Image: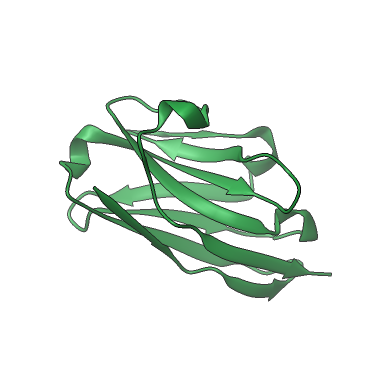
Length: 119
């Protein structure tokens, strides 16, 4: 299983980014996909996940939307109204069937993409 995250970059506060994660080596439609992030000096934290519908961390609600395209084996993370505290490396992850907000429940991880939000 390979997960390749892309779309990170540097933006100003209030801006937006769309992250993508392309998956291969798995029956994509049978997997739950999650996004997690890790800021310097902090633990990895849950952002959002989706099997049929999305679940979100409280900080993500209203600003961040997760979606998936099973035909393209890709999961997306649309992030709007970005804040400096959103600065982190964002990782996509996959697990069979249902999603959870717990990172250790995910068996497969991508390498991450850096998001930097300047004030």
